[in-house]
Length: 212
Length: 212
DNA sequence: AAATTTCCATGACAAGTGTCAAGATTTTAT
DNA sequence: ATAAAATCTTGACACTTGTCATGGAAATTT
Image (cartoon, rainbow over the protein chains, first blue to last red):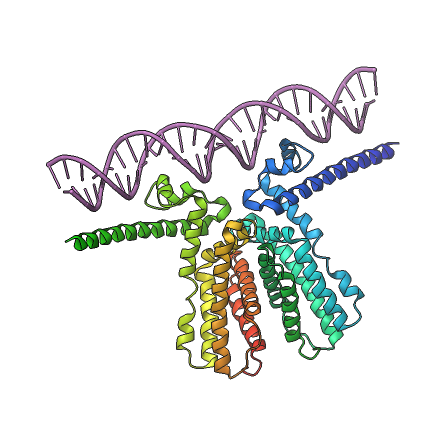
C-alpha cells in the first residue's frame, strides 16, 4: 500500500527533523553558557564550539550565521525564564505568603542566575543598535512584563485592593530594581540580594498601601 | 633671576599639558560619536580615528590602550549628562511647573540624545562582564541617582510632602522607565516620548499622592 | 552488504583587530 | 636659523574573526 510507505517516510523525516532540532538546542545551550560568561562582544563561534562537544564547523551546519545562532539562544533563554514565578502564583493563598515567596524567588534568581541575566541585559542593549535583535527582544520583554503583571494582579486580588498602575510601568520599576541589584551583586556586594528584597517590599507597600 | 625662568618653564609645561588634554577630549568626543552609532561590540579604533581628523596611530599616542580610551569617553559623557536637569530645579517655583519641566526635559532627552543613551546602557551592560569598567560605571550611576534625588527632593519640598522612598529605589524606577521608552523609541515607535511622559506623571502622582 | 545520505572535522580564505615601531612633519626652544 | 622635542602618519606584526569548501566518518536506506 502506498499510504503506509508515505506514512513511514513522513515518520522518518520527522525523526530526522527532531534530531536536528535537538542538536540545535544542544548547541544553543552551549552558546548560552559561553555568552553568559563572556558577553556578546567577546564571544566568538570558535569559543562557543570549544565549550561544546563539537568543532566550530558544525555551527554552520546547524545555523545559517551568527545572528541565527544568537536568536536561537535568546529564544531558548526565554523558554526557561518566563514561567519561573508562576508556581508562586498558583500556590500562594494569602498576600503575605505570596509576597514572601516572590521576594525570596527574586533574590534567589539574583544569586543563582546572575550570569544568565547579565547576558539578557547585554542582548537587550545590543538590540538598541542591531535591528535584527529587536523583534525577539521585544517579545521577551513583553513576556517578562506579563509575568510581573500576573504576580501583581494576583497580589491585588489577595489584598482585595484595586490595581491601577499599568503593566509597562510596573515592569519598568521591578526591572530597574533588579538591574541595579545585579550590578551590585556582580561587583561583589554581598548585601545586594538583601537590598533587592527590601526594595521590592518597599515598592509593594507603595503599590498596595492598604495591605501593609 | 632663576624664579622667573622656572615660572616660565612651568607655564609652558602647563600649556603643553592643556593642549594634550584638549586633544584627548577631542578624540574622546569623536570616539563617543562612533560608539553611540555602532555600539561597543562593533566599534574599532580605526573606525574611531576615521570619524576624527587624525589617523589611527595617534590614538596610541594619547591613550594607553582601548580600555583607557573608552574610560575617557565615559567620563566625558558623564560630564555633559549629570547636570542636565539642574536648571529645572533652580528655576521652578511650583510643583506643577517643575513637574511639567521635568517631564518635558525627559522626553526631549529621549528624542534628542537617544544614541548617546543607548551607548550608556550598552556600557553599563559591559560593566557586568568587564570589571575594568565597573568603578566608572558605578560612579556615573551614582551621579544619575543623585540627580534624580535632587529633583524628587525639590518636588517634595514644593509639594510640602514628606519624602520616604530612598534614592536607589527612585532612581531604579525612573531609569527602568526611560530604558523601556528608549527601546520603543529606537524601534520606531513615535509615541514612545508621550508614553514616557505619561508614565512619569503617573509615577509622580503615586510618589506624591497629595500633590495631585 | 552496498549505496546514499547525513553529519561532523579540518583547514583555508579574506577581512578585520589591537598594538607598536620607524620615520616624516610640525612645533617649540635655544 | 638651528637644534630639539612634540605630534602625527604610515606600514607592519601577530592574532582573531565569520564563513566556506573539501573530504572523511557515521548513520540510514535500499
